[in-house]
Image (cartoon, rainbow, N blue to C red):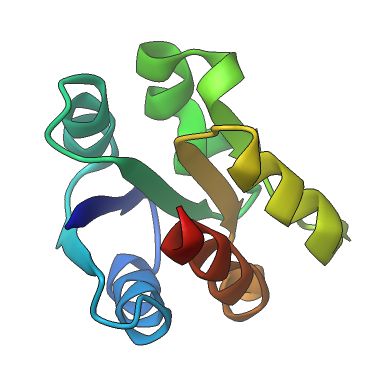
Length: 120
């Protein structure tokens, strides 16, 4: 079973519930601080990271970017822009491990990310 850690700065419990809802029972989900969540992915204790903040990239992904590298992370939404569905799916399929987004877009992006992760 693949493991997803929820980090970021805000709405962790709400993100966890969405990940669980759209994960179809195929994922182990844990909520951690952004540092601990990124470390779990780096150390192989988790497969994927999801985090929310107000900008989609700062508090959502800062630790993941520092520990996993830019090539493994993607901001799928910012206050003024949400990636379109095809772009989000492409990022998941490209091998990204960490996904950051704004809290107000979690209901839009989490279902798409989870749909693609469920296929891996």
